[in-house]
Image 1 (cartoon, rainbow, N blue to C red):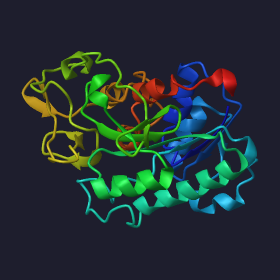
Image 2 (image 1 turned 180 degrees about the vertical axis):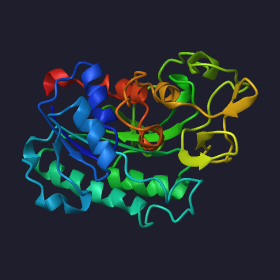
Image 3 (image 1 turned 120 degrees about the horizontal axis):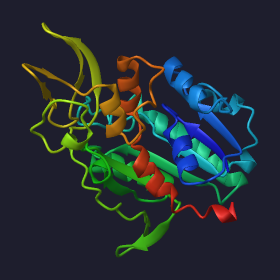
Length: 285
């Protein structure tokens, strides 16, 4: 497959394709965060970096041969943790750049596949706007089914669809993944926890009186998941953050904990993306 990944982040889409056995020919990554690019090139040095998504018309890409477009457009204006500016907010409105790119590809290749992800706390109004722009309604999947964290997300895709409801609306027909029953206590490297699951991974670096750690905030409640470690408490470490998103323990070894936390906190849950990609009929590609 030839793939364009917008807002590529830590390159979860490429890793998921590899993990489900789909061969990638060319993989174009649109990303501007330096350490995200560093991690991507570390794991997949053949990735073609194309830069700022707003300059997509300048990219040297043969759009008619693109098979899959990935997009995790910014959620800051949609999330309950943000100011709720909505899909037309300064950051989240980049979704419409993805729509422009997708429509351009469709005009050249009507069979192009796509995946768009965003937060489960987005308003019904914004979900409706996005769905009508894409021509398909999303499936809602919580990462708690396959990892030890609560992470509610919408996924729009034409990888598998069906008509539903009174008016035959087209909806994303990806079934819920099987619950693996993974609990927070199963993935911590040491210490004790009282929570069954970690709250959604979001990071800000902070200095306490006793130790330096990362704060991980739930998008809707602001709660922090703490791990008891002897007489102190801590938040999840880098290995545990990788496990919460379904990555190998050493996946972010080349990055500091703060940088790894930034990418993992904003990224996709690897087993969820693998699950969605497992429905691609890649023999027809």
